[in-house]
View 1 (cartoon, rainbow over the protein chains, first blue to last red):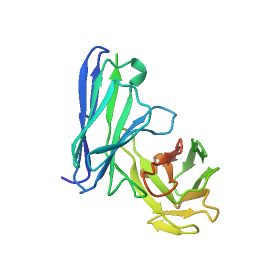
View 2: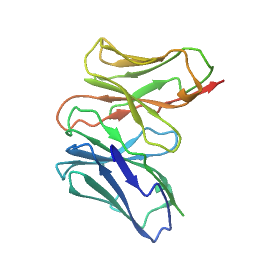
View 3: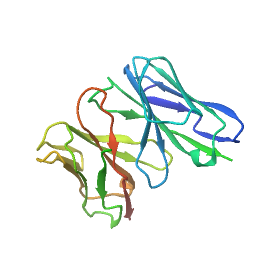
Length: 113
Length: 112
């Protein structure tokens, strides 16, 4: 399998649920990213990891908790989300965290009820 | 923060027509990227530009890195129905922990 994969592709959860999104990259990259994509808005960067260390956190609410156990895997743990958190969550990876091209996964479409 | 102005917001064209879209910024970027996103999928990289004035082609797609480093355009020649999707520009200001700034996208619809 090649590229960046994300599971699940679709997720419906209640505001009291806890769920996790998973991302895996098979490109040998050292940096991974979480983005939020909402309708009619530019992609919003949430988190950046470089060699499993978090290097950027763009003021994301604590109800989103990232985890990067190794350079190939990235998780986004979700708890007590709000309906406005419904969006497409995209994972991306790049060879390094600075000045290089990012490659995206297919995304997880999240609906919070 | 930095913002990219991408235009047009949407386009509806006939198959076979050429298409042009562009992105402008108030600040300088060192890298320009163009992505295409199909419904229900993540953005796929089309073209990457790393030098001011650079003109790069990928099949029917051509993109240029503006001389001022504050703009870029993407042209699609002889459009076909599978060109339908949302096209995003993205800019990267420099090295280090530089993150991408994305435009809002151009939605392209192609009529057979």
